[in-house]
Length: 417
Image (cartoon, rainbow, N blue to C red; front, side, top):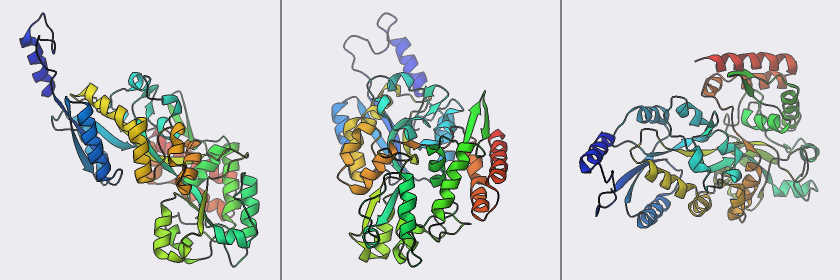
């Protein structure tokens, strides 16, 4: 409706002047409705951004609305399909969900805009790659979070370990030294498939690949099998259950209650650990998941959010200005500092260097990845064959045979439309 009214105004104004160019007329004031997810940004941050953005863009009003994650997928899809005058013009979405929304032509192609001066060459790959659908960029990276190794400094000292490992081989050797019987070298649940994904990517493998528009599972590749073998060797150096993931039981509680030297988790887990065991205050440290070579952290799954613009927006240019501001250096850096996130560009990692856990996360994020960029990946996670595969291998089943079976199930799930 807003588009129709604007078109009628253009026609009725004058054929000679053109819309918005009537002598003496003022540019039309626009309201940009922004959907951000609950807990993604503090209210104080959103208030400051709104105030300063509106001061710098006098013809734009912001209407920032906080959304809950529960049921957000259906709500976003409805907004993309309905030309509602009160609908969103900018939406925060999970980085792995961009393909789902882009598939139905519901998002504005931001490829040209992102090539202007947005620093796209420095975007974190784990946010930028899933923000693409085909060769177009629909999602603009906003913030990221990923796993690091959280460790007990006191247990490291007791074992005579003076520094975190620099390579995966060193990590195994160090963890074996920490695994004394009384202490667990590491607590790694048997179905922590996000951590496994990082090991597979580090070996050069993939969870699934696409060729000529057809996706197939690739857990049975030599590279993916090497990633699983590393996981098996590391997981054996602790008492993590082979038939459960990191939330069953929550690994924060296990880490807080026992003499566990390491866990693989986002740094924010430490808040829960210290709440359950305040005596660990000052005893915890962080380092990036090690890679195969010294000086380069290992690949990790990157979670986080991208910003998208619905194709049916009536405030295209104004919405793009909002995206540019939120993902630009100033406000993106402030968001990272405020919420303990990784900024959206590798060049901004220094902004969080003073926080040990966030600095470790930022170093790993430079090697970050995301799940395969197909809307059907959600079908894989709904009945996740990767978890079952991991448990069977950890219980002694033949890795190659089980990987082939899991890869076939992934292929079947990805073929579902």
